Length: 380
Ligand SMILES: Cc1ncc(COP(=O)(O)O)c(C=O)c1O
Image (cartoon, rainbow, N blue to C red; front, side, top):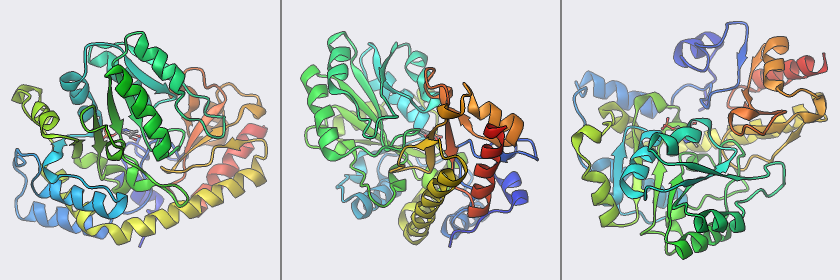
């Protein structure tokens, strides 16, 4: 069911990941997969365009999209979501800005670091200060330190940006961990904006719990979700904010039209198709990603035995410690000497020299070649 794109297809389809990488370089950077889009999604989009559904989207919360997401969350996360608590937004990043602007106090925002790099600036874009909560991601468990969180709130921060499952460390927080976070947040009357874009891509061995599914979070949190990472449809532009109550939903939906970065009609069509009809494809995808995760560990053990990779619990992004090879910026070394493009660790955490993030959502053959090129480059 999962069809690998050829290099030519990938270059034409993935205009950022492949299109903006030199033709002789193998791209393993941007979080997109080298797989053909699920047929059910393609067909829904083609049918919609043929039917002329190219105008404005319905301006509504809930609706068919809210129902599709609620049904999906019920089946996959065993979570009860009120369809009317689902608000469309153009993408997760815009949804996070909106949530910060509309719901969060004008006060510092706690950001666990390393973080998804575009979000490093998001507090500042909304006029707030970011305070870092640095996590030791080389530590096996690497959770959010509750004492540090408590100190940041005590010093005036009012919001926590939670990303779970986490990019780039691949952690999936457990329910007890989330409950611990909830207790500290509740104690300070603070808020959580929980980025759960990776929730559909939790690999065997881990289980995703939405922060909103933890008791006592409904009034202080929103979750940002989307089908975009799991179904490779980020360019179609439709994500969702899930709220825990009507009041939060109404505040988000009442923003002036001028504030609203509207989502796309085709994006709504694609998201509904993915949520309603994408289960068999998603199952096959998770199996493939699980195999790729295992293969990557084997390849690293054979070709780069000094590399230390965190166990990837969710996402298709591996966080790899290459400090033993002695380069401050191994991503650059791999690009220049090995012609393989990785993301540099310091993009996610200025202090994380010697690390890379590797996207393994590709074919086994390409993954072998990626690791081989890395090994050649780093050994040179
Ligand atoms: C944690 C996280 N949040 C958000 C995004 C981007 O989402 P969007 O394109 O919907 O803004 C990504 C993309 O990889 C991500 O990893």
